[in-house]
Length: 350
Image (cartoon, rainbow, N blue to C red; front, side):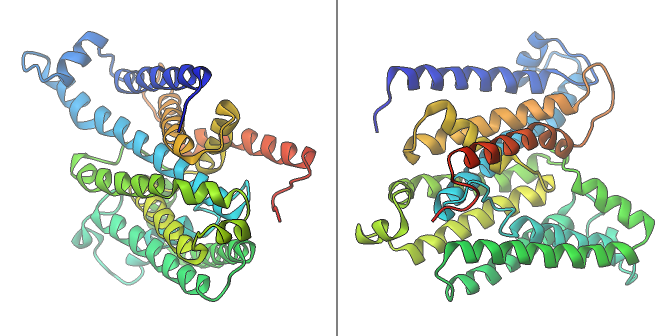
């Protein structure tokens, strides 16, 4: 892996932009706290306003770290799935993994009241352990179904379409649950579905950080095989890539990364699709040993910027993170489709 001078400048630019975005995400908020004070609080000074210390250490810092984890995980998910399926619009959400996580949350929030289950006995309504476990279980069940199908179907495009159908079926069941749920439970589910980095606290991060890092590390380990898949599945097979085994690895990685982020932050759209394309156009590189860390860094920057914008500078309210990612991501997806049409590589290749 060798980097040109241009690549090094771009990498340096991304690192600087990441540091600026992370700092702004911690500093900016409804309560104005000077940058110097923020730095002292992070460095552990005990001679400062206790309220400011609580705001920084218990709320803004975990929120910024969560944004970094979400951006890197979803972006790398999108990259490896786009490479494997040879489809520019593939990402974990297309395979229904995010829908499975959402369905798990829907079962807890929308049906608990109907069956007279005390949600407080389960641990609370929103942003608590019961919802987290439900989301992860939902993602893993869908993942298991996809893995069973993947053992019998060798065509990547067919598997992608089946993933879309699974997502539609789950969405229909969710709508059924919504129709019969109480207004209070429906409101809670809708709020969770808007996405939010602010619900994650330190005890959640102790679980989330190692899960995301392991997923990203395994993605990087598969870089060589992903590079060979860019040349075509048959060519990769001729060079010794076990495509069936590779498929299971990618589905598991995507399921764990996508399911964990969805569980803690809610479904976040467009990051997994948009960031890999922006990064590839910026670097003009196709080596996954370069792309995976670059995409993770770019994804972190995007989610940090989205989190900053969601805080409505000058106001005390926060708009849903999904609203901001959709506003920024949808135009990029439109640009991808237009670009693919011009290059006669529209949505599905080979």
